[in-house]
Image (cartoon, rainbow, N blue to C red; front, top):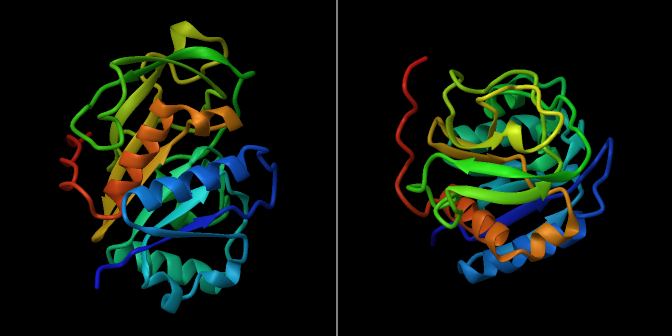
Length: 230
């Protein structure tokens, strides 16, 4: 039988987003629509080889701070390298700050944000399930995350960027990645910086974004083309 479980992990050891319950509910609904079963937990003891081997995907939903135990880290790393799917949403960029593997997995780290405000997401690739539902220029309101470095050149494929000319407080300039994916070993990783507010998880366009990302990390659709060498 193929793996059918989606583990939605919502533990926080730092700032906790009020949107987490809405996000978990939406993800469970999207998983069900894809024929997957989903469970939500904040228990780091869930990260065992036995539990993860049943998972088609693991989702970090706005996790912050150190949220895994040493044994959980080992199990999670083996899971991703062995073919597991990982979807990281919004503040998941601020999780596991002292674990080098996690930083390498995402390609960069969270580095603050300006106030919530409207702006424009520029979608560079529509051949990926996670961005196929999005318009080429997507007007959106969110916390526009800045990062410690541009993840390009770390092996990720950037799918969408922020147009910093449409909002205040961006720090990465003309090339400001917001959504990207990668393959790690046989595993698939997808990160979206979007998803701060509760109402995002009721928005059909954003839900389509998450549904496509979840489908892809769970093994639906072809692998993404490798990014060009830096």
